[in-house]
Length: 211
Image 1 (spheres, rainbow, N blue to C red):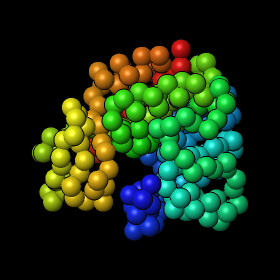
Image 2 (cartoon, rainbow, N blue to C red):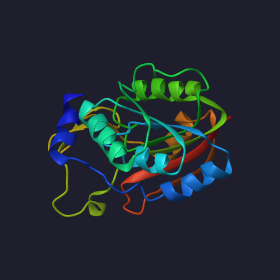
Image 3 (cartoon, rainbow, N blue to C red):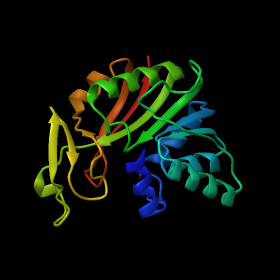
Image 4 (cartoon, rainbow, N blue to C red):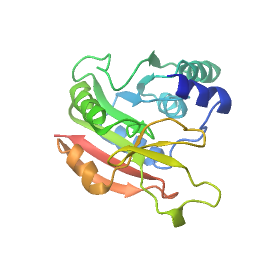
């Protein structure tokens, strides 16, 4: 909690613009009749606000009180509403079974060890309805040539595919590196529509439907 609070306190609204695929994801949600959405790891609110603007019933959860504070302020400024909670997403999610029509989670799910990530995926399966939709982005194991000059992280591995940065703004925060094969394995209870790479080559994107 303290680490993420520090990120938001130092950077303010860390992100203002929605992730590049969100506009078309929202169009799909509308087409599929989605009404109630969970923004898992909502951070400082860029997607919570965007979804609320598009008339969804939005719920957001994040471990950082500062992130939730920024989100509330942003919503108030825009005269919008959302249901927000401070909470650890790697523990039981504070929502009823089959409560949501869809769930999004950007740059969040990979911030733990794989055992805890698997528990979270089970919770995602519990809180969305059958045929509920998910849009998830997770970090990529990038080759050095793909990282901008001066942006290389010093890292310490703590388990297979699991590391902690020793520098930069996410210093001390756990990261797990996925690949497409592992995403399909861990989300085996979903019909995967597609897995692709963001244009900045930093994140995998997964779009799927609970079977």
